[in-house]
Length: 226
Image 1 (spheres, rainbow, N blue to C red):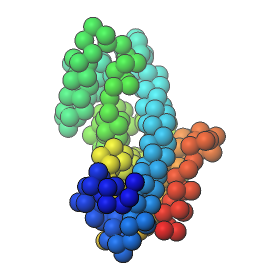
Image 2 (image 1 turned 135 degrees about the horizontal axis):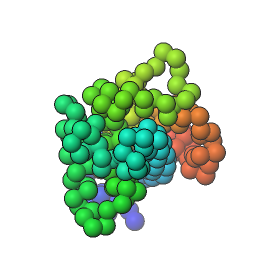
Image 3 (image 1 turned 180 degrees about the vertical axis):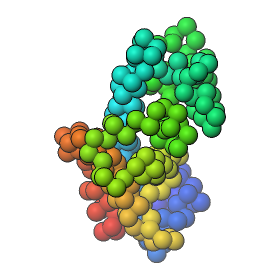
Image 4 (image 1 turned 120 degrees about the vertical axis):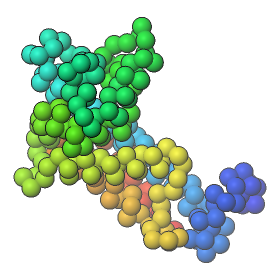
């Protein structure tokens, strides 16, 4: 396929930033666009595993914490009932997310289905000030290796950056640019490090966890060479 046909299919508007960054070199423009897709695909695999690990760590922690009070492991649903911690002032958005997903599940509800259907944003906000305090100020326990000078705010900030990356990738937005229209992978590399930091702080071996899915750096190095 020649470049002109490729540009029509992808759209000149979508390719414009790539084209500018490649000094209107058609071959490099196409290479950069496809390399960005490959790096995004690599991130999707890592983000998928990270999200599952994070929510399972949170789920297991709160199951243990609230079991003596509620007598079962369904802490999420119980958190929305009268007296539940998500009914605390300032936690309304999180409460609404749980009740909305619960309603959508209907008769198919199970605790595990509710856990899997809640968005990354929901799990991120459990580290926001109000939700963190309402949950008993204990959730940092899942990060057994967190540096001494870090707190819940640091975790939330990292998760917020990861969430932003996740949204960019999901909406097919580029992650291969630096300042302006220059080619650069600092953004991608920094966000990969945020993920590595959090997994490491959970006392998990990142090399083993992401084995076979560690091509983000390889794609970043290729992009930087274009």
